[in-house]
Image (cartoon, helix red, strand yellow):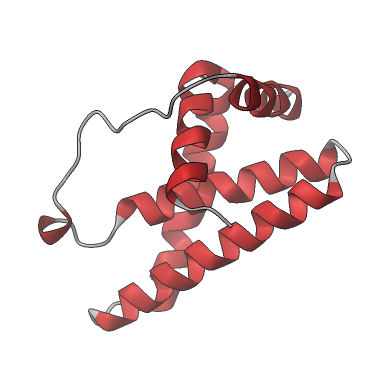
Length: 123
């Protein structure tokens, strides 16, 4: 069921218009890490799985590459401020779980998030 919803989000993103802007933003200087990188990276991991299960290998590979790029950036950022790389991976897992739940509850919002992340972090 989750993959069907995920696929419908992907199709909705492909056919709809402008990107969604974040409603509330914590200034980067006050945040302990760049949450947008992690949020989008977790979403890319979910999309990679969804495309793989839908049989779209090429898109799955693209999203896996995007996820890997985001994870590496987060790990480097965490290390630069003295936090362990493992902590970045743990946060990704938490966010992935939250986003997987949100996919089922609000597909329109998730479609907007996919558009936002795709535009902010192209391959």
